[in-house]
Length: 127
Image (tube, rainbow, N blue to C red; front, side, top):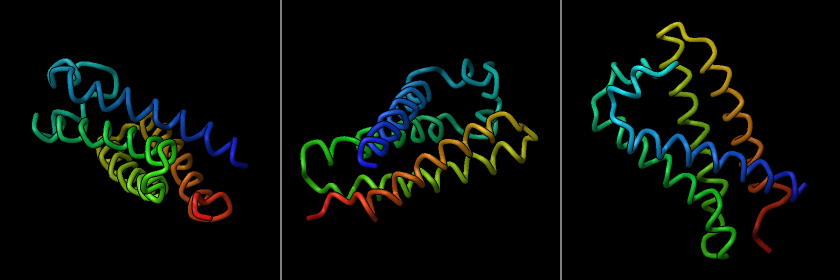
């Protein structure tokens, strides 16, 4: 179980890192022109950049606390925050009638929920 949690955590961290880096460093106009990037037209540049920064922090928060052993409770807390973020993402895409991104968001939500469940429960980092 611990190995499965680490694998899912690593995969989700990569998703967070790529998504956050893209939102933070790619111009909003270029994001809007990509497939499923039209949602950025509904938000300000500052919001998109802030979202990217939060995703980068999530990538750090879901791995680093457990690795260094400082505040490992932040791993499942970060996973719960990611679940909430994915709910918001799904709502945004559903309002735009975009189904493909909703499926991806649902998969990421399930991964985060698995991490939160596992790290709050049977494979918690507490002694």
